Amino acid sequence: MARVTLTQYLIGQQHAGRINPDLRLLIEVVARAVKAIGVNVSKGALAGILGDAGSDNVQGEAQKKLDVIANEILLQANEWGGHLAAMASEEVEEVHQIPFDYPRGGYLLLFDPLDGSSNIDVNISVGTIFSVLQNPTDGADPSENSFLQPGRDQVAAGYALYGPSTMLVLTLGRGVHGFTLDREMGSFVYTHPFMTVPDDTHEFAINTSNERHWEPPVQRYVRELQQGKTGPRGRDFNMRWVASMVADVHRILTRGGIFMYPMDEKCRDKGGKLRLMYEANPMAMIIEQAGGKATTGRERLLDVQPTKLHQRVPVILGSANEVERVSRYHDES
Ligand code: P6P
Image (tube, rainbow, N blue to C red; front, side, top):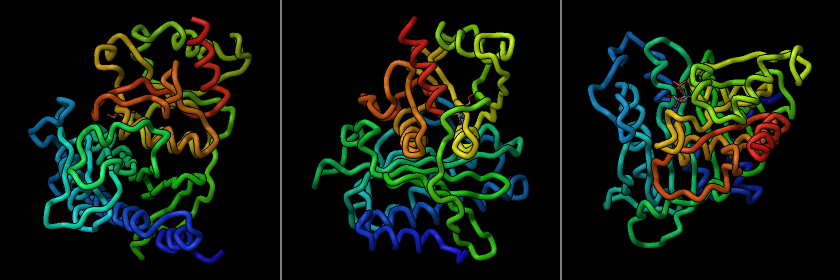
């Protein structure tokens, strides 16, 4: 089969009238930025960029040097192109305005520049997650409120996975499509058309060290999985937990599964562990576009009305039949 690159794919989508030139440019710029991030990530200890940056992010978490590098790469790559009205990053408290001497466009870009960065120093896969919204306000600088749109309003979403191979997984609202980086050519090749999540699975992903802090419906659900053949599910299950959301979600997108970072007593006062705007929402759009489901346990994730840019939310997503079961257990409790 002739190799189709990301650029050819995007031009095809534009010629089909599905995306406009600004959105095509946005995706291409993000793709170039994640290639640069991947180059830095793959240097590891050789470049003296492992370890802590000596600063904290807006979440009060110690930043890794690569968190800061990845954030700078994405901000600088996207400032000059004229496709964005503003940006928001997990690593930056405030909305990042486009410098006055650059043109502005109609899109808002949100991202977690390096998700799972605590895995960097132990050489485990990490990723970049991004989300694209329409700027609702013309003219004036977009405010935080401009970004506070429910996930169902996303125009596009995607992630880069810096794994054994570097992949870019993308949805423009018509299915989920995967691209693999050809490092020799430096281009993303269209390798995974229309990725879909199987409705059923035998694999679950959750940090079980938090079991005593979970709410009863999640405790019930996971206990039944652990009971396997001897319990009400009547079959055995397997567990995976990479502690890099991008890696866990990519596995689920590829072979099914359910990913859970539910509400627990430890993170209740923060509203959850994972961030809504640039982790949960883009992953929820991808999973739903691939035929899966994504919920807080009580509400469809893409329907959550944001109130703060960096707010956190419980996340349960993946194979539709398993996510529906967890939601049912919440309804019954
Ligand atoms: P824990 C990484 O820090 C992250 O935000 C997600 O990528 C990952 O799924 C989760 O947190 C891991 O959390 O509590 O298991 O370290």
